[in-house]
Length: 233
Image 1 (cartoon, rainbow, N blue to C red):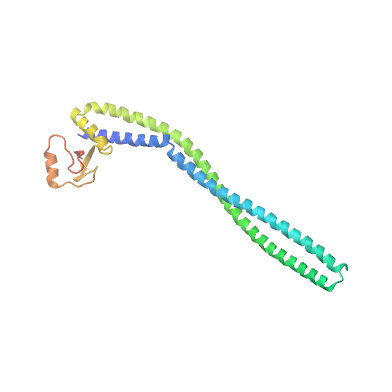
Image 2 (cartoon, rainbow, N blue to C red):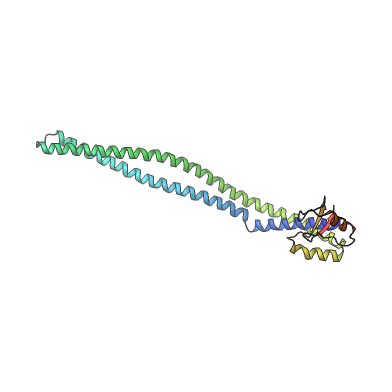
């Protein structure tokens, strides 16, 4: 019966290796790395779009400030060149110049805010670029690691299958048939040890009476809870 536990250990190892192989072949780890990279690239793209919009707004404000400055200078020249003698016209011109300077001041304040905002966005974009670079490196690393791990898994599977093939002939045919019948029904675990009165498959503690009955049983011993084949450790 101990040999049956050895077979179960081999089969469980094969199941784990095959599950990992499927995951690698389906690109599970690589897909996760690529998803992380795409997410990082998306954040970087949003920041770059925000910077582009900020650049356009900054250029608009600079053009507006320059235009108002030139207009204010031209109006001031008119104010003092003696070409306007009418008091009301002079007053209106003074009001226009004051209005231009006030608007220019507001635009300059807004431009200053945009420059501060640009510094913040550029710092965030630099962090995002570093994150993207790291994510891209991770994709390349995982891709290479996956190939190497698949090769190692194939070697281990070959070893385990060879060990299984050598062990199976040593087992009783009826016991082996029951084991093979139970495995797909019990999530791959058909046989388990009983340690300190506890079935190591379902983790249920068997009663003293049941344990005594099992010890006296000559044939196949099965857990009263999960109905797996059990072996006293």
